[in-house]
Image 1 (cartoon, rainbow, N blue to C red):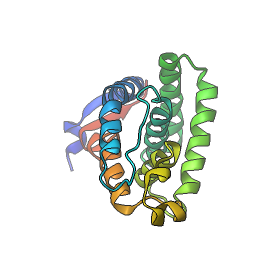
Image 2 (image 1 turned 120 degrees about the vertical axis):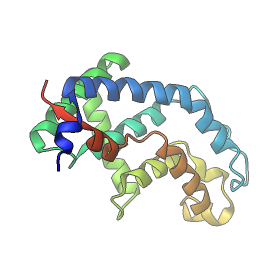
Image 3 (image 1 turned 180 degrees about the vertical axis):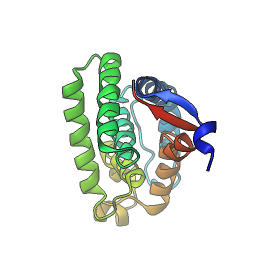
Image 4 (image 1 turned 135 degrees about the vertical axis):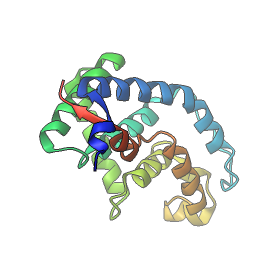
Amino acid sequence: MFSIFTKKKITEEKLANFMANSTLKLVESGFDDVIEIIENDPEFEVKPSLDSNNIDAFLLIIIAGNLKMIEGKFDTARTARLLDKIYRKLGHHLNAEPSILRETIAKYQSWMGRINHPSKNVHYAMSKAIFFRYELNQYQTEYFKNMNTPNPISLKRLDDIVGQFIFDWSEFQENYRLTEG
């Protein structure tokens, strides 16, 4: 009942800055580990050989998923303001026009929704997006390769990996009160 008085205040601007910076740092520092885990997945018939310089697709998947998860966490106006600030921060760091970045992310989100249909679980969509964007189907056993679907065991490993890159909105909302600005 009195949790509103014990929550720390954080402005939309600070949250946007934190999300942009932490996402970029986390992806940059964790991508080599992600590659290692994928390449050593025992479910693959042939060991994948992924390029550690091919980080862009992974970054876009992580950004797209995390930004999709903001929907429904705040009222529509606050969500729009927060997303706008996050796109500006990310655009600055990535040397991209925020409107172009927003369009690119929207395309990724749409594609992720299609490959994960009928499920609306964004976490799973992110895992499947990694599977398809990095063309991991070619390394599977014939059975899964012919179905063009991830082996459930490999997909579970991807889910575990992706989980490390997802912003915890429940924890945020328990501990912080978002203010305008």
